[in-house]
Image 1 (tube, rainbow, N blue to C red):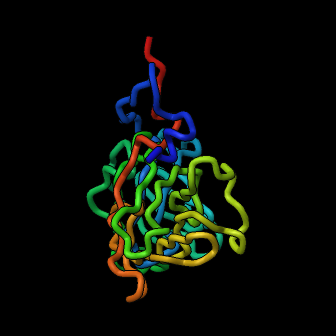
Image 2: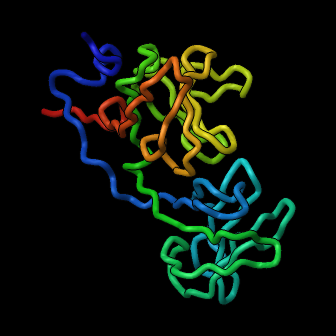
Length: 224
């Protein structure tokens, strides 16, 4: 059987898989009591001599203000968490403090690398065989990665037309085959392979979901 990425010409003679890039391209916030603050943050400039970051689609900003880090909602709540840890990057902060507008539990932060960002994902072993697919990353949706099949549109469509894809739907990862939801995972994680998946009893067992770098064109290079 020819895999999706082989059919798309991503693997073959004179090509090899590159080592994942370790370049730091952002970070994640997870576990915060203000759930909309959780997700992926990317660099958006500098403030106070240190990099600042934004998380979308919501109006959250992380930046160094004079002598402390702030996690701030510029759209409504204001500062929700802060830290006086004088470190170069917010994912190095060891102690966050809840501000008046924040809610417990406190957030945890972790660096994201380009290799993380470039990885696709594979679903295998699902009771619903049509859900066993390999998907490639296309960007972010609700501040988490969005994936669809190799050869599918590279732009993310409107929510009511999402199909044959995996994405974060506000508080849960969702997989759709066609326009039908097959499995979901409500684990608060950045990537689908870090979540625990489940489905309807008729679709058991739930899939095994893994990180897959093979299915992404940018992860290949031409050899002499």
